[in-house]
Length: 236
Ligand SMILES: Nc1ncnc2c1ncn2[C@@H]1O[C@H](C[S@+](CC[C@H]([NH3+])C(=O)[O-])CC(=O)[O-])[C@@H](O)[C@H]1O
Ligand SMILES: O=C(O)C(=O)Cc1ccccc1
Image 1: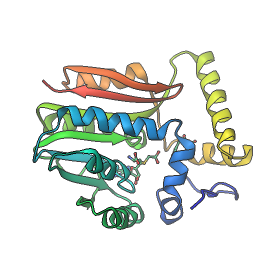
Image 2: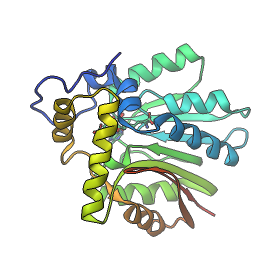
Image 3: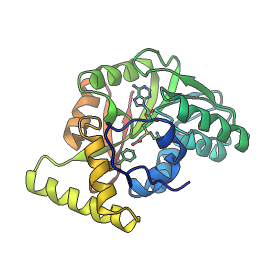
Image 4: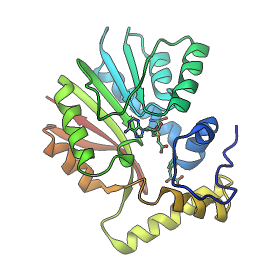
């Protein structure tokens, strides 16, 4: 279904409710530049580290697109676990997993409230950005602690520039992108307002510092388009 959530006047903050969930795949494809390519890279790099019976967690799995694609491309038997705290998202995830014949354990949980035992790979694409600072640092430490040695954390984030002028140019370029995707200026402005104080982006440097402070041995940018970035972090 086509995302028209922000065509009408919005009075509340952005939420992962029934309305957003019902158009979510379209929203993500049209709102995140190179979403499919970022997902393809997430999966290909993940596959380099995975062996039979490894546990893979997707934190903020939404409609389970990434776990379904990972399963389709893996020749290994994987234990796939998707976690999200939006029942509307998880209902769609369950339907899609069934339709694609992919076995995924879906957990309706807040990321802060559970552990990720025996994790070989943890994925979290465009989700940490919704976690408040301090809580976010705590969550990344928990991710590090739960990963087995040799484990990998792949995550994607909307990012900001540490340079004010360049940062403004980033926003302009992103708005141009959204216009090419068919969003009107009104929709763009409405969503921007709804995301204010909900989506809190870090700079590239802040993301990497958070990862290294948590204990990871290595962190690199795998992919970047202006203000959207994918990182890989390795625990030795
Ligand atoms: N505290 C929390 N606990 C659990 N879930 C949460 C929390 N906060 C937010 N979420 C969930 O994180 C997801 C973020 S969307 C991820 C896209 C997906 N990774 C994808 O690649 O397709 C990204 C976006 O909308 O920009 C939503 O499903 C929220 O319900
Ligand atoms: O659409 C936007 O303005 C964004 O910043 C990206 C995004 C994509 C999907 C949900 C929330 C934010």
